[in-house]
Structures are given as structure tokens and as C-alpha cells.
Amino acid sequence: MTTAVRMRGLLVSEARKAASTPVTYGFLAAILAFTALNTSLSLSDPTANLNSAAGVRHIFSAGRDFLFLFIALGAVGAAGEFRHGTAVPTFLATPARWHVLAGKLAAHLGLGAIVAVACVAVQMTIALPWIDGQATGVTPWSAAVVGPATGTLLSGAAYCALGVAIGMLVRNQIVALAVTLGWFAVAEGALATFMPDVSRFLPGGLFSGADNPATHLLPVPVAAALLAAYVAGLSMLAARTTLRHDIA
Amino acid sequence: MASSLAVRTVDTMQSTPICVDRVTKRYGPVTAVEELSFQARAGAITGFLGPNGAGKSTTLRMLLGLATPTAGSATILGRRYHDLDDPPATVGALLDTNTFHPWRSARSHLRIVAAAAGVPEKRVGELLDEVGLAHAAERRVGGFSLGMRQRLGLAGALLGRPRVLLLDEPANGLDPDGIRWLRGFLRAYADDGNTVLISSHLLSEVQQTVDDIVIIARGRLRLQGSLDDLNARAGHTVEVCTTRATELRGRLAALGIDAIPAGHDTLTVAGTTAETVGEVAALGGIPLTAMSTDSADLEALFFELTAPTTETEMAA
Image (cartoon, each protein chain N blue to C red):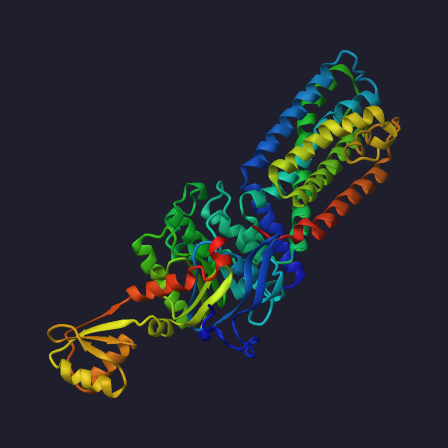
């Protein structure tokens, strides 16, 4: 079996795992619900300026507040293998553990992108009719819509892969979730308050300003490259440490 | 108390389907397996026996690359598991029954493993039929009985049509019908020239299935040999009834086999197998009316072999 055939099989296997795991649908529902809620709240904010491109961009970046859920989705998908013992058949079928890691990263990039597309669809379904009644000239192809939507798509895919790296590194599903939520919901928030110059280089802050060129945050290409580096770094760390440990 | 039966060279390591060579596994201060060596041959079922905590599962995990030996090597067909060209097509393994996502169906579980193993999807349906789970293929594994999980695990092990099977306590949870099916299946599988290694903590559970036996206790080898070797060592007895008991006794004595009269037309024969007694009788044209073997001593020998042998072991 060639490496290409092996990797294609791994991708199919990982996709089937995600599709047959209830937690995938739980996260999907949660992400869509929070996106819908946040978009609605942003639209109903009396200070929102829907006549400006910046205001529209702000609305379509509302879903970005819940990117940590994409990380949690990836983390649970990876660490769940160890919780349920399915890591045993996984590593028996594919003994090269970094192949499994690569397959999971690729599959969750796709899964994150699919969920992100659903988020964007929800945002458009809610926001476009709303904006249409209060402003003019905003279409799904407007730069103020496409920009943030692309950012959501890229960041959703990348954060889901980042979650996989965290899950493979930590291996314990509960700890992986706690680390994810603790870091992205608490630690980075605190750092953003007290050390704003540092926080823009941290995983959670990278894409917060992707749709807003006026902020002091990193440009999108740099942020994307740095996020990819975080995924690669954590994956390599997992491959060289915990992934080498015995499988219980 | 490693038996002299265990003293085998490893010069045939390259061609041996399963070869464990001076393997040691330590978890911190705890030594799970120590200097363990044994082999399993093709065309035979080898019973890997020992009490709970003896190191059987750890050894199987080392063979499968899921655990790394602290020292020594555990190879299949002369190679470590992750060095095999196509592991799922070479080795099938059933380790425990908690390797399934409870929300997935049996079919879904097998489809996931099949995709990763490069096995055509139609094989999934075939195996569900073969292990008797076709009726439960779409049910969640979380609702499966232990026996059904064992059958599903066996189906997973067989996905790649492997030449070597490693099964950890495969009869656990199976009903008598399932055990009979498993015995027949494994016998046919080994008779096709494949290699089977099955672990158990009960000698009686595998006694009717295995050809060879490896007994370990506290991570150390206690005995390796054929079941006949073990029977002979156990002082295994055969009770035989015939109307020509005196004549049979004489023929056995001529072969150096002791037979003691045990009632009317009955002999108790020690130090041989039922097959040998039957052959001797047949050669002499002596009709046998009944014959049975006494395995109580075999069980006693198993306990003797696996009992603590040193003060350190007794204190452990």
C-alpha cells in the first residue's frame, strides 16, 4: 500500500469517526447557536453602525468570539480516542503514530472548515435581511462580508487542527477541554488586558482582528502563518513526547 | 522455576511467526515482564497462560507495538510490528473489550478500522456474518453484552485476513455456544497454517483448544512446551476399561508404561496420553469399552507453576 493510499484511507477513517461521534454534532449545534445569538445581539446593538463597512465587518466577525469551541472540537476529537480506548484499533491499523496525527490534523482542518461555512451561512441568513432593511449596498459578495467570512473559514479550520494537536499532546479528554477553555477563555483574556502587546501573538488573539485592519493586531497572512506554526509546533511536541508513550 | 522445556534457542527467530526474546518491561519500580522469551509456531494454537497480573497483556501489547519493551525484542515474522509492510494484513489482535466508542454501531466501528487498514468495505459485512453479529450490525456498541463485544473485537482482528492472530482472553463473556464456535474457528484457522496466540488465566478454558502452552507468572516464564509435554509432566493419567485388561497392561509394560489395575476390567495408566493407549490397544486388537483422562493433576501443576516461588514473590 502506498503512502498516498494509506493517507487517503486514514482521512476517510477520521472523517467517519467525526461523523459517527455525537460530540461533533453537539459542538456544531453549540457553535451555530452561539453564532446566531451573538450575531443577533450585535445587530440589535443600538450603537452598531450598519451603514459603514466597519460596522458590517463587525457584524460578520461576531462568530469569531467562539473560536475556542473549534479548538475544543478538535481537542475532544483527538483525546476522545484515548478516553474510549479506540486509540488501540487506530494505532493497530496505523502503527506510524505521526501518520495518525497527520490524518487527524487534515480531517479536522476539513471539519473546522465545514463548521465555519455553516457559521457563515447562519450569519448571512440572519444578518443580510436585517441589514438590508437598514442599509443599502451590502451583498454576500461585498468586501465587508467576504473578508470576515474568509477569516472565519480559515480560523475555524486552523483552530480545529490546533485542538487536535492539543488533544494528542494532553491525551486526557477532560484535561484537554479544561486547558482549552482555561487558556482561551480566561488566560488569554487576562493577558490581553494586562499585556496587549504580547496577546496579539498568542493563539487566541491572532484572528480577533483579522477583519479589522484598523486594530493593532497582526495582518492576516502573518496571523495565519503564526497559527500554522502553533499547530505544527504543538503537533511536533506531541509526536516527540506523549504520542511515543505506551497506549493503554 | 523456568522449566527446561523453555530452554530453546532463537536461531529460527527470523522464520518464527511470534518471537519474544528476553523481553523486560518496567513501569517505574514495578517490573511487569522480566527476561521473558518464548515462541509460537505456525499451524498451531499456543495458549499464553498465567494468573491475573502475570504480564500477559503487557507482553501482547509489546508484540503489537502499543508498549515499548524496556529491554529485549518482541517480533512477528522477524520484524517489529510497526516495521511490518502491511500490519493489518499480517497480524490481527483482540486486546480487550473496551476499545469501542459506545455510540458507534458495530458496522460503523468496523468501517472506520477497515478504511484505515485499507480493507475493502464489503469485508465488513462478511465478517459481521461470520462472527454472528449481522443482526446487531446497526446497534450501538454501548448496548452490547461482553460476548457481543468479543465477537466484534474478533471481527476487527480478522479484517485484514491476517496470518497471525493475538487474542487476549477471547473466551471472556462468550456463552457455551460461542466458546464452541470460537474453538472450531481457531482450530480451522490454525490448520490453514496460520499462527494463533491466545491468552487466558484459566488453563481449563484453553485446554481443549491449544496445541502448545506458554505459562508465565509475575512476568517470568515458567514453562513452554506442548500440551502433551505438560500432561506428561503433570503425571497425567488415563483410565481405560477393557475386557482384556491384563493383556493391555502387558503390552503397555513392554513399552515402559505403567498401568495399575483399578477395579474390574479397568486400568489407570500414567505417563502417557490417551492417544498412545488407544494405539497400543488397537495394535493388539484389544477392544476398549471406555477411556477417560484425568486433568486434575494438570490444573494442580498449573497452580504449582504459577505460585510464588521466592520470598520476594510471596511478599509482592
